[in-house]
Length: 383
Image: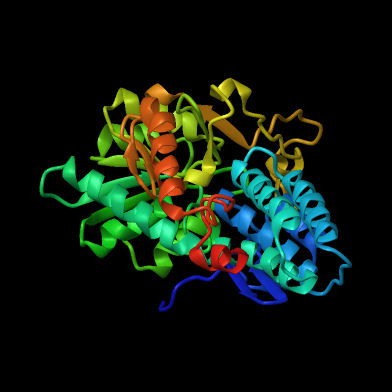
């Protein structure tokens, strides 16, 4: 199959997403016309993956804003803040949506007070804040892929590598290319992939339905395994590294990711297989000291007892369905891969604070009010 997967289609005033609940059997794009549609798509997991959740949430706000009229800049700022707070409630564990909401709302509020822009130009500025986030995501992902691939290659002998990954972290979870799967793509582009293993990722089967779909699409040599098989895999096959994504990384390096990640990290530690987490810096939450402070979303029971409406469990059985688990920093032995490089969990808070501070100092006053993923276009318009 040719051509890159495109999970999000956007042009000014129009947003469509690939309904990931229907993959891999059907590829259908559904319209997102307002923030209610965005909230529903995120909650039902028609779109998933921490970066994609934030992008679709913010773009749903941009589409809604495009067709509305306002009387003042303050009215726009208040409306943006309200809508973004609402979108955060759809899936609280993934920090990217909350991070985007906080930064965009703060920037728009400050500019509403300071700016001399007309109301119509200010509305365009608010829309561009979401658009820039979408545009920049692929560049960020490719940087993550490059740093991760180089780190893995530098720590192996001159042989092709075998990677185990979990859940879906590719084009379907981002604006394109991917985070953990972006590292796989970067390794493949360098001719360094021998084989990729992906877990099924119950109960929603994101690995079986989505990651396997992407790997086949990209013609990357790959094998699907059940969630109960990683220890057997590492015991009997030469796995070079485990590479996963993240929905939140906190101050001490503890990481929340799709349920099942923790057991992979424990098994990798036992078999001395490097364990990597790949994510943009928007996933980092320095306000929380450890993983104990992360709110873990619990999903409905029906996701466990049925697949596409077909019952697979005894009627009346109790269920516990946390969507995420927390991997302690000491189990992340390979490192945390970001668009700024690969860091040890113990150093990520200090290193990222230093990097982002330097970027802010070098960007000039117009950029200091902008979010970490924004480009020069927005600052130039605001100055």
